[in-house]
Amino acid sequence: MDKCLHLLGLARKAGALEIGEECVSAGVERVRVRCILSASDASEGSVKRAAFMAREASVPHLVLPYGKMELSQAVGRGSPGMLAFTDTGLAAAFTSELAKTDPGFAPAAERMALKRKRAEERKSSRKAAGCHGKRTNGKERE
Image (tube, rainbow, N blue to C red):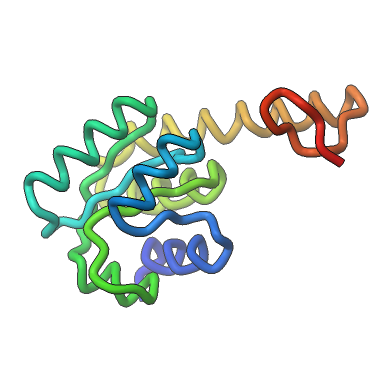
């Protein structure tokens, strides 16, 4: 299996992947989405809605070189036309691998690498300040 497809399966198992338009939309509303993906054979309307959601969430939107059938096999669900990463690290790894196969994805890979770096810096600065819980709506949770 292609490494990109393997990363999608890994993200699903880790709970870091929203699958399907309704779940992606809910993830955008909860500000959890880091990168939105569309299948190569998704309908024109679905791709437009994904692009709109990506603009609203200020995240990359990528039309993948994989069809719904390949994505379905990778994530173990029906034929998803839209997916979204909720983890910055996995999204950065995925876009990096995608950029290796197609240089057209390099700008998205660079953007996600920068986001991953910033997230790691925030995490290390919170650790240095003595914050150990996860942040939830500006409050610490133990």
